Length: 379
Image (cartoon, rainbow, N blue to C red; front, top):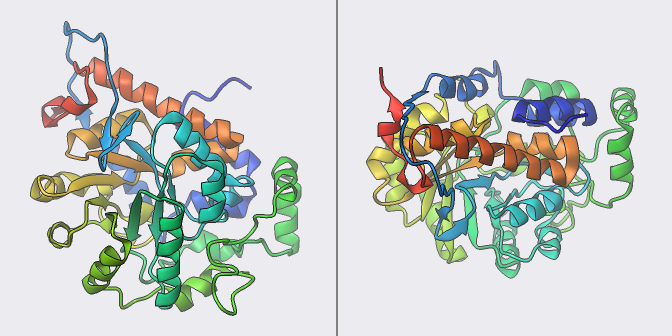
C-alpha cells in the first residue's frame, strides 16, 4: 500500500485494522452526532485569501504553546482508551510527539499510566485531569503527575455528566473487552491488533486500577463514570486544583463567552475552546464557530487553544487565523495510531505539517506567528 497522504486515508486504514468497538469509540459523537459533524463541516465554510507574487522562502511553523517551543502549534489531545487503538498506544503516541516536537497530553482514562508514559519519554508531557468525587484520588493523580514532571495540567470541565454515545452502548464498550461472541469475532478479524495486545500487559485503565480502594478491574467505562464523575464540579474546585497543582493550568471545554471570561479571571494559563469532539452536548455549536468571539474577548489575557473537527493543516491555519494560539488534535492521531502504530502518529503529524506549510505559503505568509483574520476571505 502507498503511504497515506491524508488524515482520511489513515482513518480508512484504521477502520480495517482496529476492532469495531474501539474504532467506533474514537470515531463517534453523542446522540444524533450533529455537533460531531458540524465540527468538521464548519471548517469547510471558511474560505482563504490566495495571495501571489510574495516571497515564500524560509518559511517557519515554529512557535510556542504555554511558553514551550513547538515545531508547529499543534498538540496531541487527551483521548481516553488510546491504548485500545493499538497496544501501548499512549506510550507510542507520546514518543512520536516528542520526536516531532509537539506536546502530548495523557488522559486520566488512558490505558497506559502516567508512569508508563514517563518511562519511555525524555521531555515533560502534559496530563489531563478528570475530577472524581473521590478527592483523595484526585490529589493522588496530581501528585503522580508532578512526580512524572508533567509540565502542564489540562483540567476538563465539560464531563460532569457523561453524554449518551449510542455506538458505545450498542457495542458494549469496555476495557478490557468482554469475551462475548460479538467481541471475539471483532477481535478475531483483526489478528495484527490481537498479536499486539497479547504482547503487552496494558489492557485496562492503569491510572485508576490499583490506585483506588476496591477498584482493581474496571470492566465497564460507563459504570465508572456514572459513579465517579462529579456533577458538583464548580469554579471553587478549579481554584482548589490550581493551588494544589501549582504549575501551568489549561481549562478544557470552554464553549461560551461568559465561561471564557470566568476562565480568564480564574488564574489559569490557557483555555481550550472545545465541545469534547461532539461527544457531550449534541446540538452545541462547533468549536470553530465560537472561537473568534471567545478569542476576541479574552485572548489578550489568556492563551486560547481549540480542538474539534481538525482534519487537515488547512483547518489548523483557519483556527490560528481566528485567534487560536494553538490547536489540539485527537482523532487524526488516533487514526494514525490505529493504522500504523507509532509511525502512523508521525505520519499524521507530517500530513498536517505539510498541509499547514503549503497553505500558509499560498496565502502569502512565511511565519506561523503572523497569521490573522486578514488571511480569510469574508466575501
